[in-house]
Image (cartoon, rainbow, N blue to C red; front, top):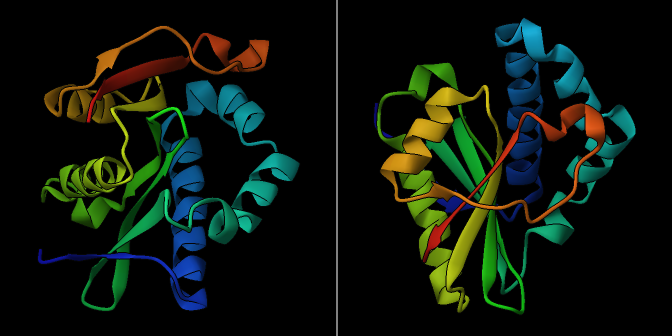
Length: 169
């Protein structure tokens, strides 16, 4: 499968990213029934919709980017990056649709975020993921991420399933 990456800037791009994020949530709920309570707690409707509404503002500008992957005209993946003033970047919402998995797209999206973070002056890239997302964790480990101490707080009902990882940029 051929794919290309762009930084999502247009209204159509942001709408496509929101659809991918909603698809990711549905996929997680369907794929991990034993973790539905934690998934729902983390993606409480009011917080989830506020996050999606804030996408163009939070992840655009000189220190952030939303990467959108397409195969032809079809959106097949996304990943977000933001860099703080202290030189720490954070990777958010890596998602690749099932039909594009195994193509190297996930690694390409992470690489794009790492490159962008480096251009923003970041020295470290961090991420949060769920411990049950073992394929994602394996990808992150292959790309040089290692588990690190928590750098954000979570509600008690999801705290035990969250894994924190980081690597130099």
